[in-house]
Image (tube, rainbow, N blue to C red; front, side, top):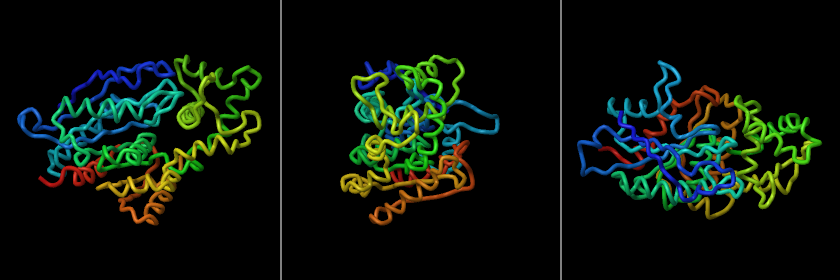
Length: 337
């Protein structure tokens, strides 16, 4: 299985506010015929990891019985179920756990890192088709969110998009964790900077606890950043009472693809896609199956074509679903050979 690891230095990530590295290790999967067919060019798919993940996690073997995603894909090729594509696995990790693949003055320019830096680099170095018609993006959870959002904002870059249990309908996937944050920060409430105290302790700890809590901090750093403050983001609720702050919450909702669809430019962007693929398990612990249902209902009302599936599972251990999404993406941007 030919996988190359690129040590890629992103200009967009240099000097980012969290001091995370600008150089990222990016696995690139090359299909079986790549070395022996120097004239051939290939479609390319960017696979976006979820919260607390990184690019190399795609290569980790969790179990003897569980193949990695590149192994799953190569098995599909060898079985004649799918054609050959280049797979690229960007690293969107931050010290808070994730970037949501967007630009934020509290985390860094992760949208620019993908669109302006990494994609041109891959097209220049590898034999991709180098066109939007031959390029797709897919991910799971926060990566699924990133795939949807990048697709809505960059129809000139991608022609196919896939989301497995992507973050949709923030009322369900984030709001239930807000009381957990209030409770976890209660012991810091009299500190000059309760959020900063918690984040510093979390980042410095060898064993990470309260991941659900830091997830909300990470989302705030993406959706409601502040400039010139420490920490550089605002939570959408009062830390003492838990009461919602409507003006901050509205800033979050502006990043929710469900509500982004209300803007004509984003709906028009999705009309240009050869494939919009969404799925989620019907027992998803973050209610992301409901978010997907809401999103596709809005697509339906807008007469935007989509492919939507559900399956009997929760949020975790669903990498086998890439067998399905990659097959659909292949048919959209590769076609039958």
